[in-house]
Image (cartoon, rainbow, N blue to C red):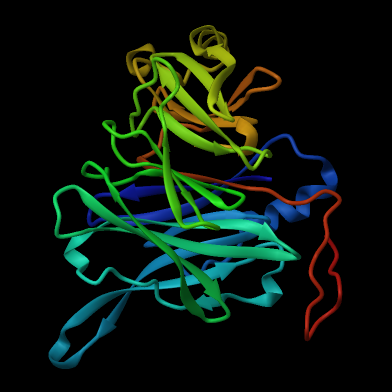
Amino acid sequence: LGFYIGSILIRPELVAFLCFVPMLPQPPELNTVVRRMANHNFDDPKNLWIMDSRNGSIFTQRREGRELAYGVHRRELAYGLHRPLCPERGINVVPALPRAQDYNRQYFDAILSKEEGNGLSYFYVLTELTNQTENFTLRVYMLQGSVWCLHTSATAQLHLPLPKAKVVLVDNKIYMVVSPADDIIVLDLTTSSLSRIQHPPGVKYDIFHTFLSRADDPSGVYVIHVNGFKLCIWLHKGDNWLLVDTICLHEMCANLRMLDNTLEDAHSGYCYVCHAGDNAEFVVLQMCGCIFYLDVKNRTLRKLVAKDQYFTDVYPFMMVWPPTFPKLKDGPARFAM
């Protein structure tokens, strides 16, 4: 249906904004749904971040202020599950995320989800620096009812993680890259074992130019890497890397620039990967100060957002076709689109 795009405004203070950008064109029968998405009330979209978006459910984090005694204010984090296609269901409050034993040693965390049965299962991954040099403990919690339960934990020797590590959940395996000096870490949730796989040939991990993508095959994972304006897509299956696609973005940008005078050559010297769809079917890129959608299969590039303030995160929002809506407890089984 489209993308939720977060941006930040530095002046007069640091404030986060969230907006919905529809994927156009859409068939006329989806006009009502698209409007509903654009007008969805996140209960004040300021200072709200999306941590996960899948199957019509959005996992959010929000900074909230709470007034203590003597006029002192405390900023706290609140979490919730939104279903914009079913606003009558309201927001499900999610309990606070677990914290490392020593919060000062907590370096990275992420929310992951996967389809199980008729719904989604949520996992919370965090890494904590141990007392030993370059040793990290990875803990994975699973949301069960209203409680985060420890699912598994393992210790690995890693270099200092980057602020935003790339992590993806494929079946029962978590793939994670935490620094340029490390291989891809694989945590098996079934056996609680850790393993490593090397990066594809010639690929050096970079937080802005590398992205991991889920594969339908439980034993596989995709790596999307941009070097200049050359985009390569690799698939790891078994013990081997297969280069499945190579796309030159220069010509696509040149053709698009001829049709869009808002693209300036002065800003075309960089290309960042913002997001990638499952099976590397699409890639969201930031180029020329704008955000673009690359349809890998059809080799088409379209602009989603023109120049804005500072982009932060991009999350796709998809719906099942034909659409189905859960039965409401205190409402009609279905509502008109």
